[in-house]
Amino acid sequence: MILYSTKNRQLKANLEEAVFRSLPADNGLYMPEHIPTVSEEFLKNIDQLTFNEIAFEVSKSLLNEDIPENDIRMIVERAFDFDAPVVPIEVNIRCLELFHGPSMAFKDFGARFMASLMSYFLGRSQKEIHILVATSGDTGGAVAQGFHNVPGISVTILYPKGKVSDIQEKQLTTLGGNVTALEVEGTFDDCQALVKQAFLDKELTQKYNLASANSINISRLIPQSFYYFRAYAQVKHLGLPVVFSVPSGNFGNLSAGILAHRMGLPVDHFVAVTNRNNVVPKYLENGAYTPSPSVETVSNAMDVGNPSNFVRLTRFFDDEWSQVKNDVSGFWFNDEQTKAAMQDVYERQGYLMCPHTAVAYLGLKEYMNLINKEVLGVFLSTAHYAKFLNVVEDALGTAEVNIPTRLSVLLSKTKESIPMSTRFEDFKNYLLS
Ligand SMILES: *Cc1c(COP(=O)(O)O)cnc(C)c1O
Image (tube, rainbow, N blue to C red; front, side, top):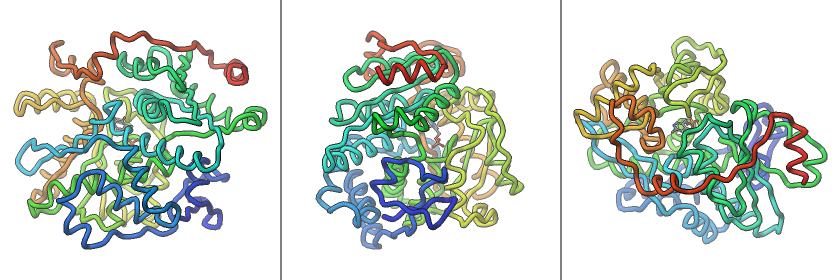
């Protein structure tokens, strides 16, 4: 796979370089130069295949120039021991549950595959690498789980003190081993600024092989395409055009859906749904992209004012607004609407959604009501509701919510974190010590 920078088509990298660098030197985003299509045979029989068989076939199409087939199989097997089931909610409405991985959020797909792929490349080169990642909650948990005990890799996670949920904090701070959590006396933006500065610091970059695990890394995008194929496999027999509704923040998830579509997955339409951080729905409305500071909402993993994958998303459409609009509709919803949907679906269907998932549900309903009813709508559930207990209890007006064992055992574990100021010197001294 050859990748080019969205800022300069001549600036190219192979897969291994793109995975370890994350970003091209000119700060663009890596895009595949050529997108292969999957075979008709594969799509015809896809409903007979498991998640890992599908992941293997899709990876093979994308990575066969970089990695031998048997190694691709091993990378996939090592990454995934969880599925992406589609469950019925209402007539012609299904939910794609992406929270069956170790941190119970969809970021597990990206993080696990990235860890497996990096570890494969490292095994060949004997390098040691140090991953730095800033998190507002879900990314850190998925990355910590994904890289825990992976040889040759150590992970430092920076999170804003008091600004992640209890469960999220325990996911970051109780693994130990090669994972260290820094509790930063500041905001997510402060955490991100520290990480960015570390990558620019000569002394640090000379001493360590620093790598980033953020959502723009191509090895996180690729595996997110797998579950769109897996979802299609489960609804194909219904014979209706398929629409995916994607709850979006940095728009990596939606970009991966577009990638799957470009690879030949039959998708009728995508719905891009956000909370009040609505720069992309506004862009879809009038063609103007106007980033703005993020505002806090109950679906906080989507509180993004300048989505990092926006450039990649539009590049799939040759940066043509009219083409984006052909395939993608945008909607956005406020916190009251989100909580009302959580309560409504719970009362009518007995199905409890996290706030991000509720936003996707609302977007799908709006699309089917306003634009096209004759479809099979699949909305993506990006996290288990129990990761956002405060919001769930508020929406339902009760504190009697079931917590899965995988999360409840975390609450009894002891947090281990290192306090950190927002001063770069402190952070740097810590890394050097
Ligand atoms: C990260 C995240 C999102 C947003 O996904 P993007 O790929 O950034 O658009 C939505 N929901 C949850 C629960 C998340 O953790």
